[in-house]
Image (cartoon, rainbow, N blue to C red; front, side, top):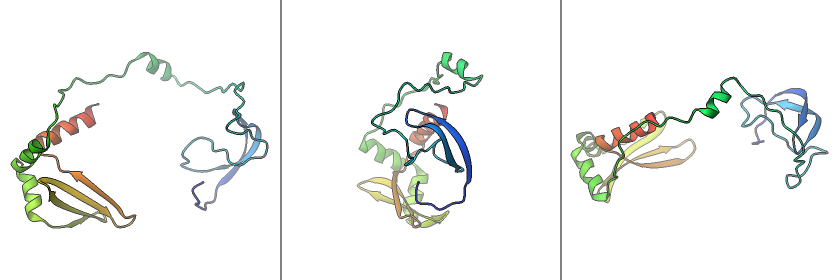
Length: 157
């Protein structure tokens, strides 16, 4: 599927889908992205012409009926009004940890990635570069008050 060669066990399975309804020889691929991947199989239906009369019988776990009736609980949390560019610059300047990172001005390696801090137009950024796959990421360095708020939103919701 993604041009990787691997050894896989074979199985004969009975498929009942809108696109294919018969017994087929299948490969059992570990860690596949979905349950069934139907490739170019003789006798399959086109994706533009599925057989919608096929009834699919999926199993229901014991927890699923309860999950349907219980709404998702979202914790109450203070909303942040946001900050503009000048406020972000001021908050970054007031954070001693951020100033240490900028003043050090050095590049370090963490887990094979190159990490550096830079200031551009007054805002401090952290740059990550992964030389293995040539991916570059630039992130705004959040001052402590904003960092705590963002972490609570991410972890509490």
